Every structure is written in structure tokens, then in C-alpha cells.
Image 1 (cartoon, helix red, strand yellow):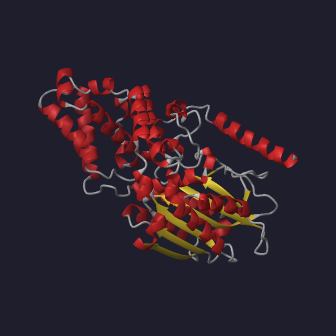
Image 2 (cartoon, rainbow, N blue to C red):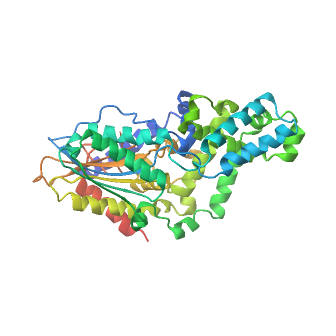
Image 3 (tube, rainbow, N blue to C red):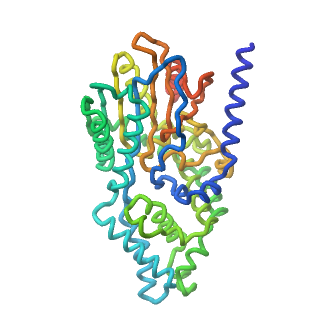
Length: 431
């Protein structure tokens, strides 16, 4: 009975800690760093946690299992650059742009030129991000990469992911030339590396979700001031421009600019006030939750799109833990895997089910904490030696120690046997 009370108390403390952590709002975060409002276009900020929690009882890291998003990239769809440029060019030709509008057109042209024939490709910053992540992984867990350790890396078949993998592996090899590295990018592995569950995807958008989303969006849209500032003739804007669409184009460009070399010369955030930046993010955050989080409006099952990936992580770990020197399993993919996987794992309470979109922020569901460019999840395994069967694991989300939905008296470390059982039971229960 005492054990039950202790577990209940620990869970209460666990949830209270998240409520306290969420007290600082996204609005406050954006005042400290506007770039955070970029959601999935956020350039990888690096870990916010400095020194990691020491492992208990002489345990040492010996194996890492990882899934990471590619690094910073250009936008994927050509219309994301060309359409706002065309809208502003037409207005400029008609003499309808303000000096600010003309300067915004100049900046958009620069972004379009830079991205020409590079749509969706890794930027120089994206390559550097993966070198830095790999370097920190090596420095934080040197025991994993000692001697002729085995590193097995796989990427999706998308070039930005392949190049992210190669940059990470180059960095590891520089730090230890003796590493035994295998790497591959094949359709053979896409069933878990980049799986699309058509049945679950078809359930994302139903009457209830769309009604809730559009009601939320209409309440929080704040764009007319910013778009009006670009045009010297409001009648022209009303008759010829979809101002909400232009706002979305320009906010996406502003968000992604931090991933390109042009961020050293220009910005587009000056178009928007702090309130407008916050409102744009708020609507985007809700959409990501509805499509990839455990949103009960569409059944709360969207994170299960990554059930094959999670099962692969567990099965690969079971195999590698039998080896004296397993090394690391590295996987390189996309944010559309990292976000639902984070929710499926319920890391840092991101598995919450919330019907009221107004409550997401207060509950700490802040998308920029999960899936920036270069986002990654690392399972780090610990034991004293090969004979030690009491294996511990901790999970890092973007290189910060994360909490799992299990009780542990040695957080952020958990017994692997309990973690494994919890997630396998969860996967087996899914219908």
C-alpha cells in the first residue's frame, strides 16, 4: 500500500513540475529569441542543458540508439518563394507598394535567387549542425565510441538526410579514425525510417478537428496591419491580394531565413510585431498538434504512425545489448517522424491529450521544443560491465535529458526492462 501511495505521489509531482515549467509562455520565449517562433523551421539551437546528470552506481554509457531530423534546409515548394514575390511584383508594377513593401520585395527576391535549384536541400548551416551534434555526442559519451566501436547509420532516401548522415559520420571519424562505420540509404528501410500510415493520415481531418481548428484560427489571426503596411492603396490590396495567404508566405520565409546564409544580411521578422509573431506561431502550433500529437479530436492515435520506428528502436537495442561493444545505431530522417515519435514516447509530457486548443501552451505543448532543424532523440544505455544485466537508459530530446512516463527514483535514468515493457505493452495494445 505504501508503494502505491509513493508512486501516486511521484506522478503528482511529475505533472506539477510540467505545469510549473509551462508557466513561462511562448510569448516570453519569443521575446528572448524571436527565432523560436519558427516552429519546425527553427535552426537547431543546441542543448540548453549544460552538465548532464551523473549516472548512478558506477554505470557507464555503452550504447546509443538515435533518430534525428536532417539539418537546416531551403524550403521545399517553389511556390513558397515565387508566389509572394509574384504578388509583390504585380503590386510594384502597379505602383501600389509602400517603401517597406518595395524593400520586402527586394529581400524576397534575394531568397528566391539563393534557393534556385536548391529546393529542399541541406544548407551549409544544416551540415554544420550535424557535425556539432555528433561532436557533442562523442564528447558526452566517449565510452560508446572507444576503439573499433561499431557505428551503424541509416538515412531516408532524401538527399538532405543522406548529407546530414554523412556530415555526422565524418565528424565521428575525425574524432576516432578506428571506428567501424556502416551506412546506407535504401527504400528497404523506409517502412520504419519514413513510414506513412495512410489509414491514420486519413483520420487527421474530420469535421470535429477542422471545426475546432478554424474556430481557433479565426480567433487568433492577426495579420491585416502587417500586410496593409506593404501596400499604399488599401482598395488595391482588398481586391487583388489574399492578405492572409501573403501573411503565411512571408511568415514562413521569415521563419526559414535563419537556416540560410542570407540570415547574416537580412531579416523578415521586422514586418511583424511581437503580437503578430506570437499569433502566427499559435495557429501553427495547434495545427501540428492536431496532425501529429495525441489530439483526442481525431482519436488521439496520430503518434502511432511511428509505431514501426519505436519497435525497431526496441528490437535493435535488444540485439545490440547482447554485444560487448555495440557502439551506436544512428538514423537520419524528418521532423514528421521526430514529432509523433516524441508524442508516442510521451517525452516531457508531449503525449498529452487535450481537446481545447487554447490550453496547449499552458500545458507545455510547444512545438519548437521538439522539432527544430537537426532535432534528435537519443537513447543512451548504461551498465557497469558486460556481466551487468541491470541496464539503465536515459533519453535525450535535442540533447537535453527528458522525462519518461514511468516512475524512477533515479531520474533521468530508468530501468531498461521497465521502459521496454511499458512501450511494448503500449504498442501491442494499439489496434
